[in-house]
Length: 209
Image (cartoon, rainbow, N blue to C red; front, side, top):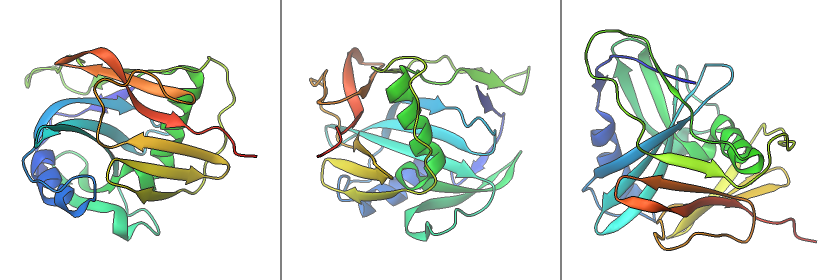
């Protein structure tokens, strides 16, 4: 379950994404229209995990971000921004593909048939609590063993990011093909406002022999 705070962020998530996206080979524009977001849960409660689906230049991009209370060792090149959170203090926001917590959560969702995290709010008064409008689900089976992931590496292309974590290789779709419903391996599919049919967002490559 992901905990949502009534907080002010400086810079805002939108401004942070606008500044960072043009540095990526799969995103060269600064116009950002957030179509939807989904969250995964960190079982330890230490790391926030939020994935954005963004419309820019006529394309839909997928951008997972992790929020940490301290820098992630060895990941300077994957830092999106530091932001001031009015409840939690300074947060370090990273490209999720560099964060073992995100990659573990993604692999678990794919392999076990997991879904987006439910949202829990730490406040009673306004602002209005957001409805969950973006849904994701893995094609795997509950109870499937998820490999332990301690370190990750990734390589960007102009359409996707290939993540390597031990013997596990995940293709994270960056430029979403809104007509693609299946993949060559276990996958994560999703829907969001304006996209009612599930499409592939990530998939695990079969082991090569």
